[in-house]
Image (cartoon, rainbow, N blue to C red; front, side):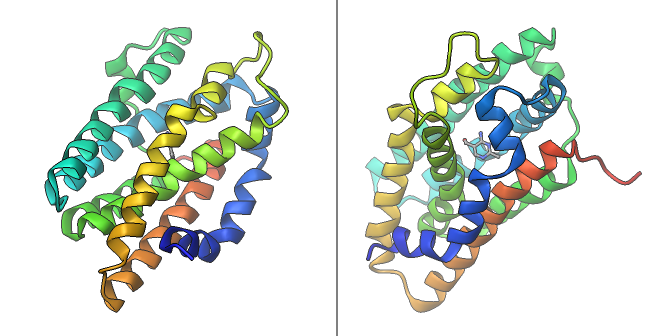
Length: 222
Ligand SMILES: Cc1ncc(CO)c(N)n1
């Protein structure tokens, strides 16, 4: 069994829970309130800015030039591809890119990004790939699951989001990251593998918490 498959089996219960989360179900059906979706997109724009930094750290720590280049491209693509999706939605709400990035992070978003940035600060390239793997992999699984019966109707309010995350281009991101994790895990020691399992599991749980955060429009207590 590949190490990435081992990681997914470890996290399978919280992965399965994502496909039945009310936010995900409503997003797929197009019944999600625009207010909840706006909350999600504004938080996700903040999330992606930090995710790009995690990929940049992966480029710095990468053991070879090809991986360093690919991580740097992932940092760029995270900002150019996913953020352009957000900025197009932002136009719906007459928000400039800067206004979107001025949105304060929610507690869950802050915690999830600190979790990934901590691994980016002190982890190996393998640990960095692992901590960001649920992010890329789960969205691919969710996107494909929501479009398993075919593309959304042209009038679906969240069509662009669904098409991006169900796309082969987005699938290629997690395929590359899984291939790196599987290759590099072969030479990882016991302690590093334990850290990788923890990082993957915690990121997987934060992915579920991110849907829950958006569904509840989470705010700081005061
Ligand atoms: C919270 C979160 N996880 C994963 C993705 C996919 O990049 C995203 N945009 N946001």
